[in-house]
Length: 143
Image (cartoon, rainbow, N blue to C red; front, top):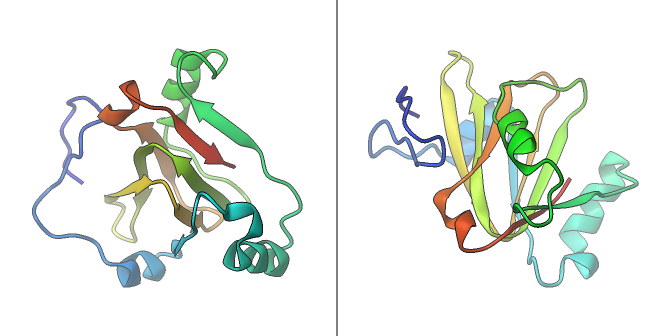
């Protein structure tokens, strides 16, 4: 990810090199595709939930009409932070970016859209922002 201060919703590609799933795995970020239309009956998602002991899911819709305190929440999502527990994000609809820090403390930008699920390990610095497509559609994600 480049260091530009331009609109955070832009791709901010440093060059044409993509980060592979193997490179994400090296920093502890896991990726799984889950059919967003049938996620409630999805065996991969159920296995993940069972193996990791996940007992609940929260669902939010990131749009001005449905997310209380929209501007403040979007700003807070983009502030770099970490958690003591791993964090799971599953995008049902829409698209956006999760940024994570690599071992050299550089940002890696991960584009996610419907069906993409990532697991970020405890203690990894990250942030989230919507992309420019959200003005036309909502981002619906399970937390």
